[in-house]
Image (cartoon, rainbow over all chains, first blue to last red):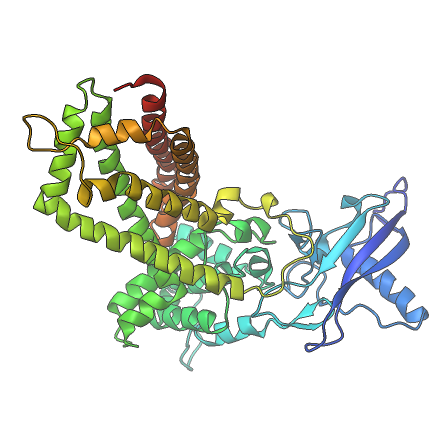
Length: 260
Length: 226
């Protein structure tokens, strides 16, 4: 295999994985021994190996979310050994490699835990609460017509950079998973501030923050205790500054908008 | 609900109330500590008794006392509402969790620290406020004020009270270390220039205020005999 380390020895692991038949069933941690795992595998590839073995043995494979496996889609999740997306900082589970674990390790794998993210099956949770928050205002309305010139509206570089940093949120839900309150403040604030900073987004800024925060509360996420766990575990490094900005936007909107 | 109550019963709205009341209570701590420094005067308690007489009778102070009680009540009420909501937001916990890798202990235990402070507050009111306002303190010869100072000396000869007060002030320090800078964050008052200062100032403020209060029972226990 190109790029693999010839000296890396395959490892044997013990996996403790949350198994749950469906939304309404009770689940439990099930232990699986797994041998000969290459340190060059990604965490998800390691689970693929386990699932092949389970299929050969005639058992139900472990259900887990994944898509691009490049760390940009936000589909993969997993609470690994007590950390969202595993022990490495700034990494999605798909980009987490087995070299960060040791031969003989026991690895506990659980789904995101939040009332707003009900478990569908095994390690898959329903994150459509995030979609509904986005639908409540996480967009910019655009009129039809001719294509506007690129860079027609001057935006200071510092603002553009901050808006872009907020826009890198992939909506994976690690912030909710890591937060002791299962709060969605980091996600919602990234979505609010990426638009609130830009001229195109300012048009609907007040109604946006009011509606998105209201939807966040309806979905049953917790409040923000400013522990900073969300930003520390965020795979793309969304900053807590976005939460401060959203609170500022929210208070300003509530005080001055005409939505009664 | 109208827009106003809706705003302040949202999660962000409640955090704004927590912040505003929290910072207001911080200002109370400053006033209370500065006044209590009269306990260190070597005058047999005269300055302290005059000060406490003023605090109990001045109409402005008595009005602020009501605002202070409201500040405590809103802070405590919203803390309970938010804590219950936060518990409901995660009905099933993790089998394995390592929050110490991503956050400080005090930031995760504000409710516990606040509860310790509340218990202390009730004991503290029972020790001094209740006898001063509703009880019968011994008088001071040839003076119009009563001798609250003697009450202070008596209370702090009890090692249980001294221990409770010192432990509570440690809890207060940790509560403020997270709470002070967190209040600015909740209010959206962050800025590249000022936030580092607010954070440093918050830690210094928390330690100095708590240390100042903790020194009082220790001073009386070890150095003052009436």
